[in-house]
Image (tube, rainbow, N blue to C red; front, side, top):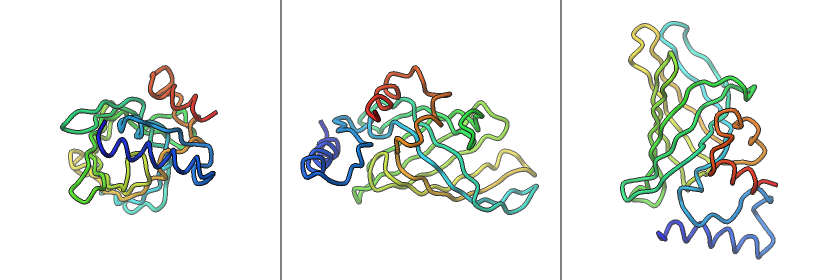
Length: 178
């Protein structure tokens, strides 16, 4: 078990034992890759070459499965529109601990008409994050955006059922939300 994995497990256990902080929505995760699994709410603003500036729109970030290696934590998932039924894109991501003890990640979207990539920064796996997204492959329809995510939260689990239901890690996370 890595130091980071052990730390996540110990913090969760201490907070539960002390009766505070976890709102009944987080379970003790002993594997760092499991900490990324779940649903998050995102808000962003962006500049689109063809339509201009758009401010404060939102959706859901769903990580369905993740695998850990010495090179990083590799995940797959999808972005969802606010209705939780319409997919923005499927994506693949990789996350790693940086030199300061925080985490960074990169994501690439596929299976959509507007390919893009995002770069993430966060203090801990599955925690709140900031991200910057770009798409330069669309010529006159290219865009940039900046946003933030809530962190994994059980209150959004239904928004990620379409892309993730039936995936063992996601289903285990949903079960832990009960």
